[in-house]
Structure formats: C-alpha cells, structure tokens
Image 1 (cartoon, rainbow, N blue to C red):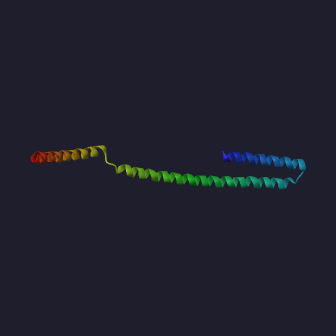
Image 2 (image 1 turned 60 degrees about the horizontal axis):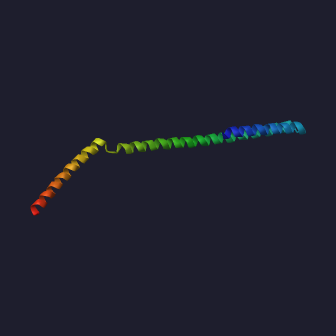
Image 3 (image 1 turned 135 degrees about the horizontal axis):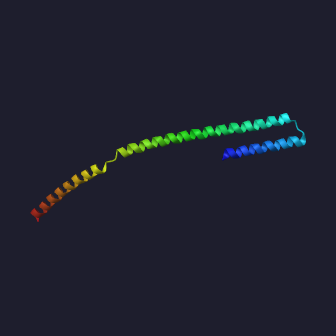
Length: 110
C-alpha cells in the first residue's frame, strides 16, 4: 500500500513539474534530471524498505521455528494418559493399604 502511494505521488510530481516546464519554458534537461533523481531516490527508499521488511520477516520465521521446537520438547516431557492412570492406580492401592492399617490400629486401641 505504501509503495503504491509513493508511486502515485512520484507520478503526480512528475506531471506537475512537466506542466511547469512547459508553461514557464524552463530548461527541460535540468527538469528531467531532477525528476530522474527524485524517481531514483524513491526507488532506493523502496528497496531499503523491502530489504528491512524481509529481514524482519526472516527473523520472525526463525523465532517461530525455535518456538515450535520448544513446544515439541515440552510436549515430549509430559506423562502419557496411560502412564498417569497406572501411577494413580498404584497410589490408590497404597493409600488403601495405609487406610486399612490405620483402621486396624483404631480397632486395637479402641
């Protein structure tokens, strides 16, 4: 969008200068040189803008890849549902045994 606006502005500037040259009779070589310089300057600015945008895009892409790698490593460190169910089953059986022992102590001392 910015590029299109710059091109439109430069084209408008070119036509305005050309009309001014025709009306006032200025030296056309100097005017054309000025117009070429303005267009070349605009093209150089656009080129710098594109290269800067491309560098930022490349950095964002690289950061996204690194973040994907971190997410994958974190996900691989999680416990699977089957393993968690087995761990909870074992813990529950231990808790039941402790509960039974406590009940036996209460019955003996009760």
